[in-house]
Image 1 (cartoon, one colour):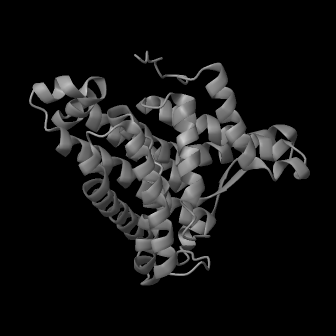
Image 2 (tube, one colour):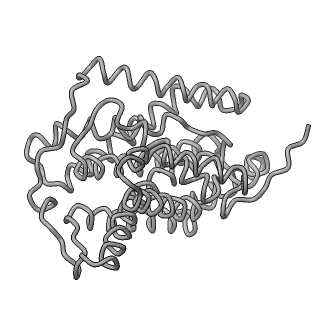
Length: 298
């Protein structure tokens, strides 16, 4: 493989990884845009969704059915968490919601651990998704192509929902000024629930795709994707929908190129580099690429 072909291969791998991070980051960014809350339980909702889809996969269901099962499972879990934990705290200080999300994260991790086991699990093999896909000298698998197609479709559908539906306009109004939106007749608790459901559905999609791509699932499998989705949202400007997508792609490309070109002794610290990038972004441009600086009144 020539150096240029190797470069293209890394770029393709980075884009696939970036779309996964974007799916996770969009949900985090939407919730932050409305509640100014960083939902640290988002990765665990992703994990629960894919674990609920595993029995469907074990029955030999097609991959698209497993994907819908993961989406439904994560959406249901997002509904339960928002209704039982976040809804009663809606008018509480932001730090209260933050601490509550950390508690939910640990609760879901340990609950799934008790109900299953710490042993890694994987979806039933999907022969079509495991087949190679060639584009010139670039070699991927069909699951990589599926990740790009599904992520683009889900991102476009979410964008159209936010821009061209009544509920989408209400969500954007909440993000601008929740008090004004409430006075204009917007049902704030209902719209917050809609926001959580959309974010959870996207996380469920990402979880199933991660399961098919890597085939290694444990009760802790959602923790790192959740954190990296948060980093992607911060890079793009947390609270910004397009920023989460761009941030995810940047993070995926950066991580892939670092692993591809650094010596093995340094490449093994790929996760550390992700959070180093987060620190640098916060130091140089805290509002992110598409975010707007906020003035805090004291």
